[in-house]
Image: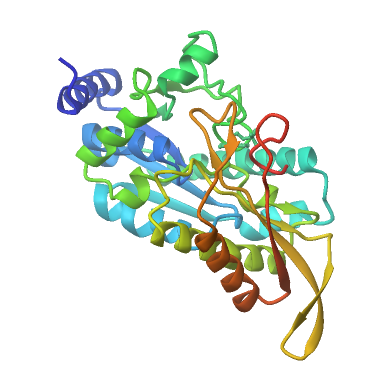
Length: 325
Ligand code: XMP
């Protein structure tokens, strides 16, 4: 019968058989799937797994620290963190077009990941070869892509733009038979904290596609603050499980007139986009309590400089996508 314990035991055996005494790497995104996959493989082969976390500077507040501290503390995994924020921001300079942003972020991600991988191999040349790439592919992903396997070919949604197709790795995909809720159970059983296991979906390109307009350091800081407030209040109101995810979007190219204290302001709007969904293919806007909306609005306009308006997105998907870009 299905128990998380059985699934874990089965996978540990399979991974050990597959990898033998060779080595594996895994790109951590901060999301649930890659975290649980990495934790499983770590348990199976220990320090012969190295995880790579590319910090593209487009993360939300506390996310990088969560991976660096909480995930490592929970798993003991060997982690290489690459601080590539400058590189990503340079590449994004002057770019407002959403598809262009996604392409640039995907391209830079691959370059940084390949470089990290080369470094891992170079750092221990005498060791066993690095032949395996761990991916957090879930059962629904397998079904959607026609059940194919064997190559590092993943939907652009799963990782920032997908990994290079000419990668000469064998894949380890220990979550291929699982649904999201099962993955969460496996993660908990492996000792991962709720902050990782119960995370809501977050796009690979991060806050880069939640700033309508050019992505700059200042705008990222502002959006990070607004997003942190929204997340804090949603959690405090006990809404984390009711809401599929709540993108917080900065309309950086829009300004509107406001009044704060004695003065006129001319600031940016922040959009709240709480949605309810089963699988993100379709979604409805969440009818969430006015009191919570009010608290988020008051706090954001009081605490985040240059934001003088908070608006609620009441569009389903379709016609709107969940993200604004
Ligand atoms: P949309 O905006 O297409 O989003 O309705 C559907 C779901 O996918 C997430 N999303 C992404 N996830 N890389 C990801 O890993 C991406 O490039 C990406 N774009 C959108 C989005 O947050 C939502 O959960």
